[in-house]
Structure formats: structure tokens, C-alpha cells
Image 1: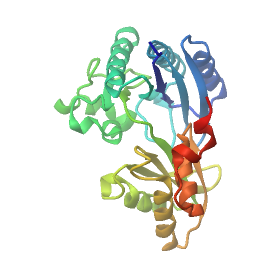
Image 2 (image 1 turned 30 degrees about the vertical axis):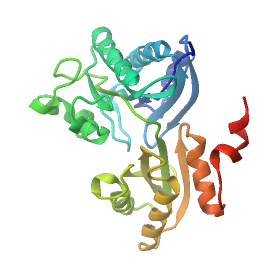
Image 3 (image 1 turned 60 degrees about the vertical axis):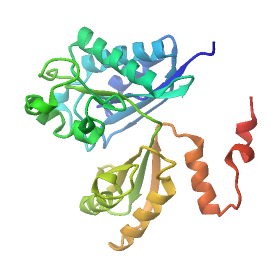
Image 4 (image 1 turned 45 degrees about the vertical axis):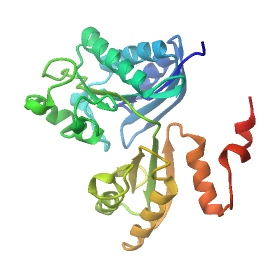
Length: 299
């Protein structure tokens, strides 16, 4: 029987303290059954994103151990950053990679949520394909209110945690845990420091305001560079390709006399997301991804 592989992409509310980030990295590297492929952090967002791949058992253990490490080293009462957040470990998605179904990832997310409450006393919401109600599918709705507003939010009838009591952990907050398809974290950087412009453009491209169905977006300041960005999650990069969001942002930015100065991908991305963009910009005719990409023929 072929082994099962799952991708695990935990996000932590720390992107500045190198000592804390290193503790998280060291923890991730020393868990059997799973491998840390990438770790990125950002001072402006004050956030770290890890990408790990391994067995379901390895991913489960990694989730608990990393959540424990974050709880012990990140104090959300002192946290400041431009990215929305509600917990020291803010979100933990599980993504099927090989011989795994989305339903199996849902069950994995529930086991993790149960253990994190039983062992660490950190409550959690289930989101994405693990959501227990339609309004919990969307991470932005789950996280609305952020760490500071969560104590009051949890007292509302419709926002009881899926696991745990109706109080956040005093310093680690609450975590969103779920299963989802692969997504691409894609940011487009604008040549201005005007956050209002980035927010206006984000409202145009994101699904919740009538934009692209598979795009979530917000405006974010990049304090160190003195510019802003449209920060997006492309939750289905085939439904909404990167180039389509990029070109729409470029078109909308022109009305404000603002150029695009760059873009960035956070964490790992499926190769096809970039090849689709190359095919579009190079105007390649009759391109067959499965047949014409060399790596697809390597064993």
C-alpha cells in the first residue's frame, strides 16, 4: 500500500523575534514523519508561514508540538502587526498531496483540534472543508474581531469554539484548524504608501466584494519599504489564475497613478500556477502542461 502524504502549512504570529522563530524552526525539524520544506517570516506582517509535508501521523504530531512551542513563546497581548491574527498559532490548514482525500484531511484536522484542547487548553474553530457551518468556511469571517475582539465574540451563540471552552487562551488566543485545497499566497506590491489605495483595489479583486470567486485580499502596509501591497490568498489558482488578479490590480492602480513595483509568493506554490502565468504572458500557443514540462516526465 502506497504511503499517504499531507501538506501542513501552520501560520504563527511572530515575524520579528529571531530567537522565537528559530525555536519554531528547530521544533519543526525534529518531528519524525514530516519534513520542513520552507519557513518564511515578515516583520511588517509580524507573521511566519511554514510549509511541511509528511505522513498524517507526522503532521498531527507537528501540529501539537508547534502549537505548544508557539504558546510558550508568543504573547498575543503584546503582538502588533499588519496581518489579521487571533492566536499565537493563528491557522493550521491540512492539504491532501498523495493518496489522501480531503475527507481524510478533515478527520485529521478534528483529531488535531481535539488534542490541542485536551493537551494545551487552546480552543479552536474548524474552517474550510472542516467547517461545521457555512459561515465558518471562510477564514476571514472566523478571524473577524482578531485576538482583541475574540473574548466577546466567543460569547455569541453562533461563535462557540468547535473545540474548547468559550474563553481564549490568555496569551495564545485561539486557532483556526481545517482542511483545504492547495492555495497560493500571492502579494502584489504597489509604488505608494497610501494604504487606502491598496484597500480599494483589494475590495475590487476579492470574492467577498464581488471580485474573483477564488480570491481573498486585503491591503497591507510594508513599513520597512515604505509601500503597500494587495495581499491575497488564491484559494483555487486554476479558477482564478495569478495573472488575472495581477492584471486587474495593475489596471485599477493606473487610475490612481500608481505603478506595480513587484510581487511575491509566500511559502510554496504548485508549479502549474507559475506556468499558467508564463503561458499567458509569453502567449504560448497550444501548450500542453502535462506533456511539455520536463519535470513532469522525471521519475
